[in-house]
Image 1 (cartoon, rainbow, N blue to C red):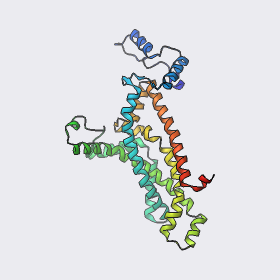
Image 2: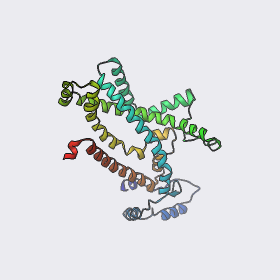
Image 3: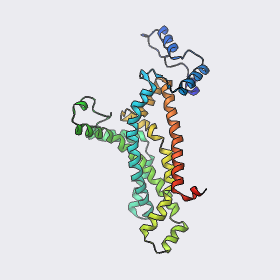
Image 4: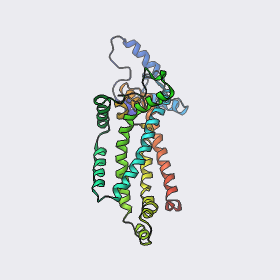
Length: 298
């Protein structure tokens, strides 16, 4: 809260000759920006304690309404991206670890490192150029066709949404799959030389059983921690990816709120992010105890 207010001026300090200073002073008084910052903070705490997140002067609606409109859109995009990325990334990481001395596995490992090193906004721009302009087979942005969507049949509406989500979803899946794959590969390589894996092989177990029942089960434990760390991304969203593809989610919302210094809206997004971090860590701890008997014993 105080960092936001350290910047000089306020949301109504813009230069606009069509809006006189007296009108801007009235707006400051209406939103409480004419009061001392400590007093504004106490008023903010009082409102939050009563469930009032404030009013967004940028969107001209309560902050709670702005969040309720954008959160489901980000949940749709990020939820699909996380599920697909973990499914593909874990499978790819296992393949790279088990066939690490083969040329194909080395190639996939190098490819995942390359994708992991690419900035998200650059990859989003390249996919946008490739499949929306050079080879125009997908929409350039948005969530639906703003003109024709309401006049489409149910099947066409669904296909319209699939087409609009394809590019941002592909961008996020590529980035997160590479990250998950490298994490899973390292975790499995740490487990394979362990004594219990050698003991399982010495008992004459099939290699598939050794990997699936013993090595992989232990190598998946770090993935639980990783899932808890990326859980806040469900609501935080991918800011730059949403911005590039004009996806109307939390990422676009927070960028616009910062640009116009919409204090209540920025603070609400920060609160949501903080809550998601706590919830993500709690879920990771519970899942870790469920997956690892040693943790339950302690």
